[in-house]
Length: 554
Image (tube, rainbow, N blue to C red; front, side):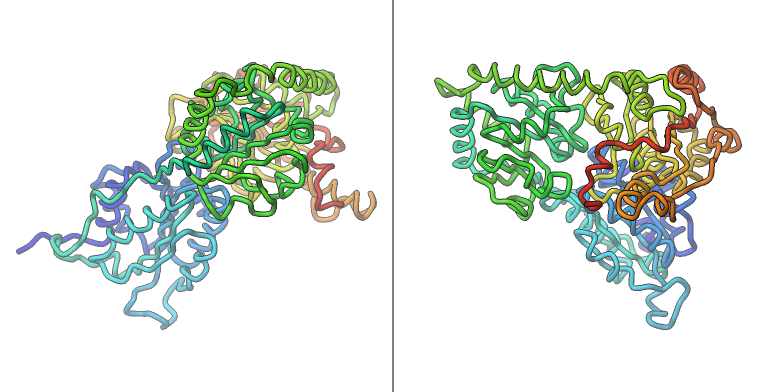
C-alpha cells in the first residue's frame, strides 16, 4: 500500500521547501491540519489574538529576513480580519503568503460555515490569488504563489484551501511537491541606460539621490554606499532604506532634502514611487534631470515625466553605474565639494534650530524631547519600529537608525496597528537584536492585546507610547478645517495608563510625565528582559510639522 499524505502536510512541506521557519496564525477548524504538518516539518506556530496581527507579522518577517513570510487564518472573518495586513504588504512591496481556510468543496454554494468569496476580495490587493482545487495540487500551488510574490517588485499572494481538500489524504507519489522551482529575479538594467546615467553624473554639478525601500528589499546596501561615496553624491533615505548610511557619514543627509531637491541639477530616485510622500513628483526641481530606478516598470515615470528610467535590481544598477563612471577621466566627483558643504550648512542650521525643543524640559513633554531621547538611546543593534500618526511623524525627523535594515514603518498605506506585529516578527527573526517600537496611543489600541503574545512567547522588546489621549494627526486637521470648537469630534481617547496594562499582562510597565525620566525608564525596560511599555505623556497641543503640512487639510 502506497504512503499517503494530507493536504495540511503538503502545505507544510511546501513552506519548508521555501525556507519558511515560522507561521503566524489564529486558529480555526478549517486550518488545523496545517498545524499538524508544521509540527512534523519543524515549522514554529505562533498564535496571535487577531488575524490582522498575523498578516502584519508575516509582512514584518519578510522585511527583516529577506525571506517570504507566511500567515495562516481560518475562513470568513478570519480571512477578512487579515485583509488589512495583506493590503499593507501590497503597498509596501513585501513578499508574504496568506493562506485562508474555506468551506468544503462538497458544500460549495450551500452556505457552509464562514463561506465568503475570499479570492474575489483578495485579488485587487495581491499579486496572485487562487483556490486550491485538489489535494494533489496543494504544494504545487503554494510554490506557485511564492513565485508570484517575487515577480517584478515583491508583494503578497493569497491561497484559499477548502476544508475537504486540506484534510484529505492522497498517495504521496501522486502529489507534486516542488523542490527546485525558483530562479534569480535580479535584473541588471539596460546597459545603454546605465551609460547614459554615467554621462549625466559626469556633467552634474549638484546631484542628489534618494534611496528608497527597494535598496533594503534587494539587500543593495553595499552597492548604494559604494556608489554615493565614489561619486560624491549626497544621499537621502526613506522607508526601509533608512540606515543604509550611518549617522555622521559624510554622504548621509536628512534635514536638507527639500532644499536639495529644489537646487539639484540631477536627482536620482531609487526604489520609491512618485506617490504622496514625494508630492507625486512635484517637489522635485522642474529644471533638474530626473532619473528613476525601480524593480517595477509600471512605477517608472508614473505621475511625473523623467529624463531616464532604468528597470531592475537597484544594487546591480548602482554598481554598474559606478563602474561605468569610474572609468571616465572626469566623473564629476571632485567638483562637488562645494555642493556637499552647501547642503551640510543647511542641515546644520535645521538641526540647531530644532535642538532646543529636543532638549526641552517642558511638561507635558514636548514630543521632540521624546523622540530625541529615543534616538540617543538606540544602539547599532536596535531595530526601530514606528507605529502611529503624529508622534511617528516627529520621529521621522529625528530618529536615525544606526545600521541597515533597522528601521520599520507601515509604508505608503499608512496603516496603524503594525507595531506589535512588526516587533513580534523582528524579535523572532533576530533574537540577537534589541527591538524598540514607538506607538501612538491610538495605534497601540488597535492591536495592543498581542502584547500578551509577546509575553507568552518570551519576546522581549521596548515599547514606548507617546500618549496624548488623542488621534492627534486627525485632530489637527479638524481644527484647521472646522475650527477649535469642532476639533475633538471623533478623535479623543481616554487617559489610559498603558504601563499598568503591560504589568497586567505580565510585562514591564512604567508611566513617565517628567522628560528627565525618559532615559532612565528606557534603561530599566532594557534591563528588565521582558516585553515592556513606557507610557510617556506628551503635550496634546503640539503637532509635528509633517502633520501641519499635510495636503489633505489644505
